Image 1 (cartoon, rainbow, N blue to C red):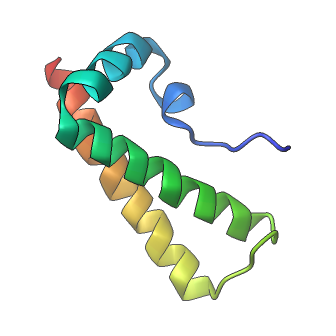
Image 2: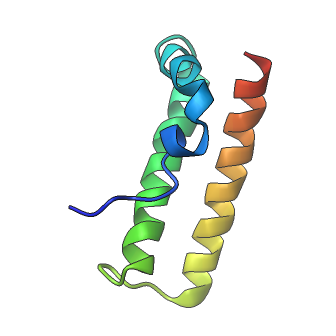
Length: 79
């Protein structure tokens, strides 16, 4: 199995403990993290042509991933 880039632990290595805690105590954060991982994996599969999708769909997914990451960071930066 190949390494999936842009995982949250890779993006925010200094916030791993905070993310783990928030996933257990904050349902909204847990949902955001799950959605981020799902979108990130779809983007990765598209980028590596494992499951190719149309270019515009891939761009939209990258934008969604960025928006989720921004929302996750907003929560992490307050913790």
